[in-house]
Image (cartoon, rainbow, N blue to C red; front, side):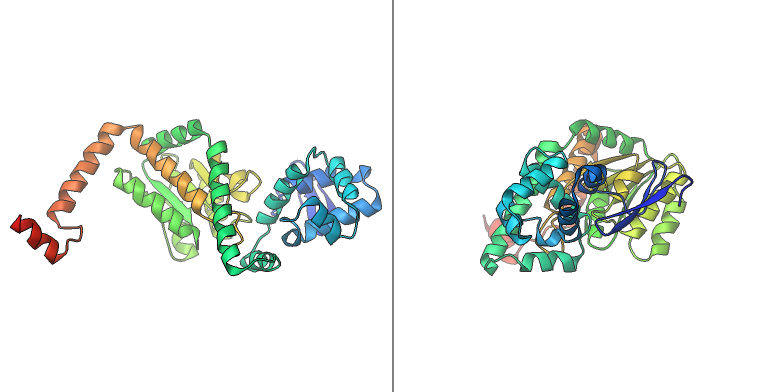
Length: 320
């Protein structure tokens, strides 16, 4: 424990209470509000909030009336309790509860939560797509173009760009690295073992850039890659889902895209859109260079017959 730190218990979570502490489990916005409001909550309301915090997968999708019914209290109790936490509307509380849930989820808890909703399979499919759209709309309303332009300038200055994403996020890291390579940047998305990722990070210095992609609790290998890069003086940029994740806390700058979904694999619709916006910024901060490279690629692809053409199509064109 850090010097001068103390331990507090709430919501089933044991954390350091110290401004200088860097606990492995960072508080979500909802947990922070609960911690600050302890003295203003009576025992029954503290118990109610602990149960909600400990079981967000059971409650994050409920209305105020449904939440009251779930915990066998009246709706007014729910409203008054969240007002003590500083929320003006139930929707604000639910938004933080969803974020709290997302930062604690595993594939099991996601599927368990989804299974408790009374929906047909067809309804589940539609609901999944509705949340994909909601995540995309949230990104559209919150993304900061200035930050993306600044990132594109960092990419332009960097000697090398290392994009780290593990497991499912490996698809995102590969997509971004491939797009950057197409634009002529020395970008790489290492795959394989922990050792392979860490050895690549060890070769970086202040002239390079590390982009770390991870969400929710964040994967250890990705977090440790960002930590090592920081120690080596490497500029770091995070792509994650909110400002409380380990990646957001470690990296110099970050952008956020929600992966909230009833699907146990999460939703990468918004992160993919964010990566597309980053590539767009990188292309248009040096348009002439990008066009030159893409024109050369197009000529080589045509010469190498990269694109498929059916035999019948070729014969028809020759006949014409």
